[in-house]
Structure formats: structure tokens, C-alpha cells
Image 1: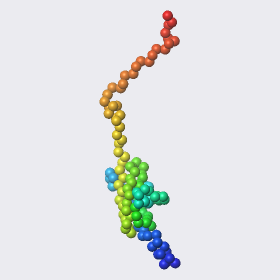
Image 2: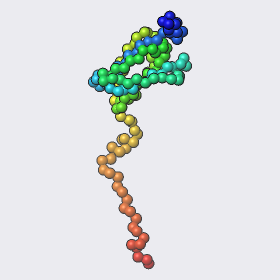
Image 3: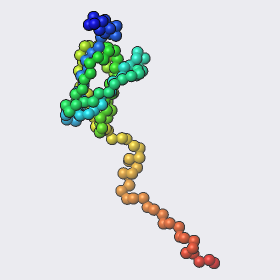
Image 4: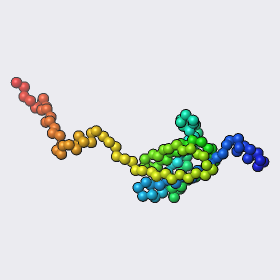
Length: 137
């Protein structure tokens, strides 16, 4: 049976053992329970069907054996961090990746300066008087 299994692997092509370590960019500490999502990428650059998700352990590590050679899209998601995404060419029997996640950047708004320009709050107009308070002529 072993020769059949070896022949079957040859038909599918070589595979790789991928190891990931996800760290915080600001201090290098591991990110626990980050989602590492892998998708095959076709020759046209489009994401293929299928894929898999791994979770990092307490040391920010995760690995998977049996990824076929070729282009692979890796995305890493963790609460409180920017989503990481990059395409890699899987071409060695064992590959290690260190991914550093960054905190979200502040968003730019054209309205931020308008609210900071005046230090006093906008003046409100007085409400119109009620008609029932007015006396008829």
C-alpha cells in the first residue's frame, strides 16, 4: 500500500509544511487566537475556491502540512488589529512566516478640521414664539 500512496502524492505534486508566527508589531509579543486563512490563487491572480483557517496558539504559532506548491493567499485577522493579507509563492518543503500585525490607523476626515476651527459652540437661533401666546388684533 505504501507505494500506492507515494504514487498518489507524485500525481498531486509536492506539498509544503507551512509554519506561521503572528506577533504584535508594536512590541513583538505573540497574538493568541488570530485567524490565519489560506486560499489557493490561480494564474490570473484570482482567489481559488476552497481554503482553510487555522488559529494561533498562546505563543502566536500555527502550522499546517500538506499545502501544494504554487501561489497561496494568506490573510490574518485578530480583534483590535489591521487585517493582514499577502500572496506567497509556496516552493519549498518547509516554509516559515512571521507576520506582524499593526493597530488600526486613525481615519482621515475632511470634517475633522472644521469642528476644531471654532472654540465656541455654534450660536443657536431662538425658537419662534408660540401662536397661542400671541393676542389677536
